Amino acid sequence: MGNVTLRISYDDRLGLIKDVSAIFLKYGLNVEAFQLMNRMMTVEICENPTAPWGKILAEIKTVPLILSVECVDEISFDPRKKRMSAILDSVSPSGDPSDSFDEIVGDSAAMREVLTLARRVARTDSTVMLRGESGTGKELFAAAIHRASDRRGKVFVPLNCGALPENLLESELFGYRDGAFSGGKKGGRIGLFQFANGGTLFLDEITEMTPNLQVKLLRVLQEGRIRPLGSNEEIRIDARIITATNRDVEAMVAEGSFREDLYYRLNVIPLRLPPLRRRIDDIPLLAENCLAKNRAKTGSAKFLSRAAIERLLGYRWPGNVRELENVVNRALHLSREDGIDASDIVFDGDFGSAPAEVPRPALKYAADSVERELIRSALTDHGSLRAAARVLGVSHTTIANKAKKFGICVK
Image 1 (cartoon, rainbow, N blue to C red):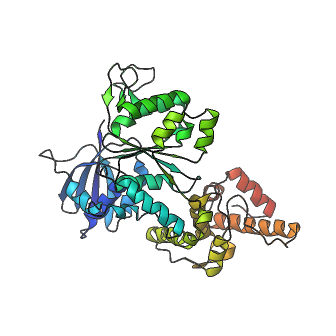
Image 2 (image 1 turned 135 degrees about the horizontal axis):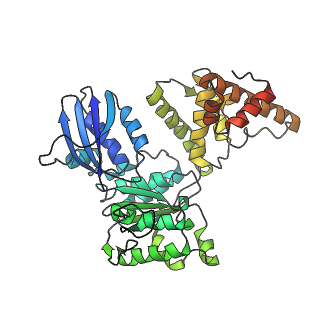
Image 3 (image 1 turned 90 degrees about the horizontal axis):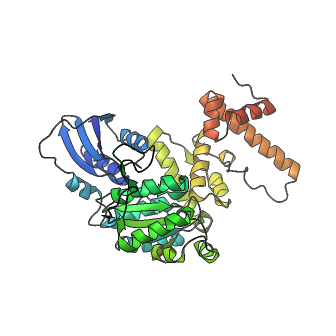
């Protein structure tokens, strides 16, 4: 597996190298070598097939005084490669690994309890099962546990088990030898168990794994060995396994759709992440965190009014933190002033809860009014049906039909 090499141009600034290194660390990337020149940094990174490279490059570009980032064929020097372990160790708090949880926002009693347990869990090498509804931040917790563990110098590899059919998931996890099946990569490919060796493999939606793969995963956990597809040889692996699910695993075990022996292997340390409706006190902090990210990208000075915060606090958040981020980002587009008002807060799936005494026709008209303003604002800001549709998360046909219904002129 080849490496990825980045050439980064920058204006001199004290601490810039640490800022860039922190991004590599955040995504669990292993830096193999680097070279520093006048206003130029070349970094060689071990290839990670699951790394979101577009997102990583975009984030590097947001570091102050970074001028450009580009992928190049190879690093421009060959002598003994100097590892960045010293720099990375100074960024990843080897002395205080608990700082790895700083990206997780929350100070409610429910969050303090789960964060305390997560910090303790990070110091062990046990398997962890993260339980919680969709949008509660299970992958964020898994990555933080990895960064706070003794494995933080190695890769963190996330994989969604529900996103791939059985045959692809098996080859992704175990790898395959050349000729193992038609359509495979020439020369074969190592699997994520092997790629995550020494690090952490995060298996999201573990309950979507088929019974056949459940048996194979159980064997890996019991013996610490894998056999790539098409191979007769076993390979010893050493990867910490963290899993996550939003399903009732105990009910699945009872009905026979999830193996009981695998459940006990994976559920050594269960961590239950609270839904947002049980940590209401964190909503202002989470919303402000979204605004802060937007300020860093755009320089916007927008803020939430007290009325807007009260509206956020009155909602039940079935989509949890992910939905909150979506609602706040939508409000940023809707608001015309620096202050985001309650009228700018539009919830997913409906348009918020109206008071019980409001008659149904009034609710319909209020919803139409908000929907009309939402579409008009998106079209004004983004200029086309397709762009507005992307922002609002619907098809351009839906936007066109709604615009016609509300008499909105589309250029």
